[in-house]
Length: 78
Image 1 (cartoon, rainbow, N blue to C red):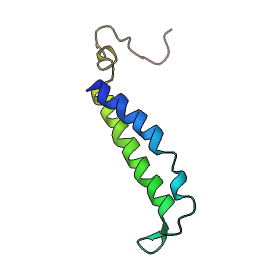
Image 2: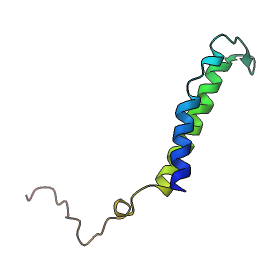
Image 3: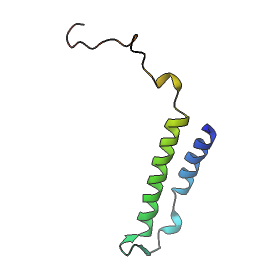
Image 4: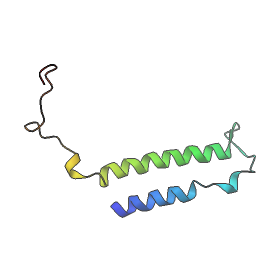
């Protein structure tokens, strides 16, 4: 699954370059330019990809803190 996430990141990098919509004046929902709508969709896809990256690619040793080895923060004693 890690390679799927890597592939999604590369895909997002490629499709982010939307030179084909620069001269398009089409409005989505009657008010939003299609280029802006496209970038809003890219942003949602990037958020979903980041979510998948945290689920499937995050290192296991960074997931949990062991309360026994974590120092207490008491507020004044150094």
